[in-house]
Amino acid sequence: MTVEGLIALAGATALFALIPGPGIMAVVAQALSRGLGPAVMWITGQVLGDMIYLLMAMFGLGWVASQLGDGFIVLRYVGAAYLIWMGFKAWTAKPPCENVTAPPARAGGRYFLGGMCVSLGNPKAIAFYCGFLPAFIDLTVLTSTDAATVIAVICPIVFVIPVGYAWLAARGRGAIRTTRIWKIANRSAGAVMIGAGATVAAE
Image: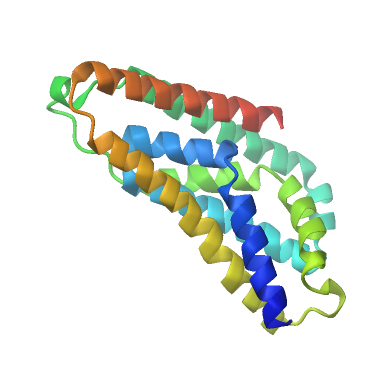
């Protein structure tokens, strides 16, 4: 792999990552309703799912997806159902000033698993990587070193950019001061999560 190829790969990956899709919508909604910590855990799960598909694409394992089609369908619906449930929770959540006994949201495994299910429930990612990577690297002569290099380039980008979206959303959440705006923000986040869940289920 050449340095120029790696730079081009990084630039193209960043452009794709910047385009808001269901994943970014889910991340923003998590940050608005739960805060930065849960959103980062969600992103970590999404990135792990992406890296699994990236490895499968690089080593010619796209056939695995076709053989496990029903399993991927189950994962997709689990992720979609979780998004919709989280959207309902956000929609019905009380503002902090009305819910003084509620503990703060904690970032935990459920957010990580939710993000990973949403990512792994989209086997079209393999097709994307199979079509995307050959423009920058020759998959027919790929070595383990090349694969590690590609992961080292792509992984930070697909992690940092969604974290940036989440940070901006969390900053907006922190600026909310009135009950009415809290309700609007929670319901907006809930609607976005429900919409993202419906989109994931329909893909």
